[in-house]
Length: 543
Image (cartoon, rainbow, N blue to C red; front, side):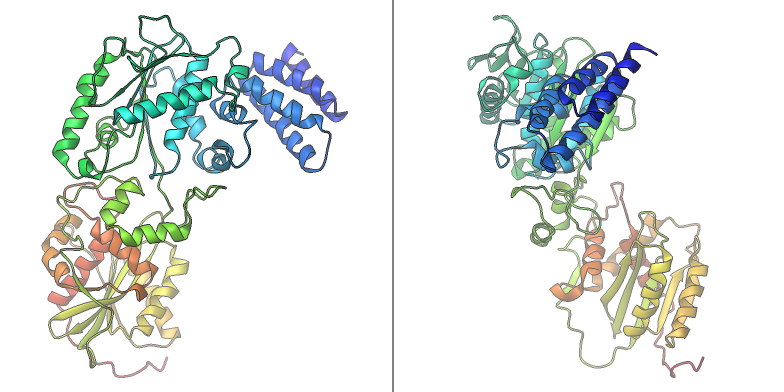
């Protein structure tokens, strides 16, 4: 049995008899010898302490739990933040109320630690919605770096001198003040030196680059502004005015690459970029387009909500995003802005043919009288991220109104009955399914389900021509799509909202995450122009 195995056995023995002070000493010794096994033992120990504390166990459980975090804090960024805030009131803490999301769901600390230890690591970017806590996370990260590598030279860059000053004050408070436990975690370092003249803070000798050398993207950079280990940038895009100008964003990116990057010493500097996506021209989007997929480059984007609109940032504190708040934000913003700022998907309006200004709208009330025709086109999907998209059109003379849609990512066991019943409830007379990739069998299943209702509907399927790409088909019918009347009333439903949002963010010049809405409308226009005639429904089938 190795010495590590003996320590683990001793740890287990002490835990059985509740000798927790001795158990934590064994856990620490395991951690010193093997970080992987040590983390496992520490996790087991802390879970037991939580149970003891919650069930009214010994008072010493809180003390030994605190000791375990203070011991691992210099090695683990996650544990460092917990240890730093141990003495703060629960309402004042930043990390624990957000940890369940940022680490538990997204693994942010794990990703940052892995990148910092990665031999070939070169760049890590993380984009989040506004107000998700990324700037405070940077404050902790800078404090962690200062304690762990006090002799290193690092840079922090932001969009303004004011932001730089605020960050300097925050890091100084974290590393020097009594509210945080930095001095206990890294004993012997003392308080860092701060220079307002050179915008530096750290533990290195005076007259040289400091542990952290800080500057704004457009400000003056002194000869002491150098980095040999980490370069951290935070929100380089100042505001929406800058973000709306591709020219200003290009200048900003040139400043970043030509000026800031030249301050690195050697080829081993790791870059960490945090911010919010503004467009395809912002620095993070440009870096992603340039380096994504290469070894050592990592790009993390955290959207404000999932595809169903449920919040990804339901923190255990007032400063969070609820589903209702997200819905209100989405309603106020155009889909492009919401996609960039809140879904972290960079989009530029150039090449976008179906923006709100280009589409035709109505208030949700159809013209008087019976429609000349009611027809639908269904672009089939079987799950896996794509949406089944079926716009339902009411035709009055030459005017077409898309009054309802089915827009659903569930598998066919869910969507087949939804499609069949929607066709019946909307009195659709003819529906065409795109027959490619299983569309024919899907149409057959819907046809059988319609018979069970029962309802009379002409169900057909047609393969998309192999000689025409999807983009070409959408481009061919783009003007016809713009002339369709789309609902703008609040009663149109969530699927209609998602359908319109996807349509309005479709682009001919950028890679589309999804294009099901635009593709199904092109199919609908093809039906209207090439073959849909008024169909008289004779009655319900007797079978």
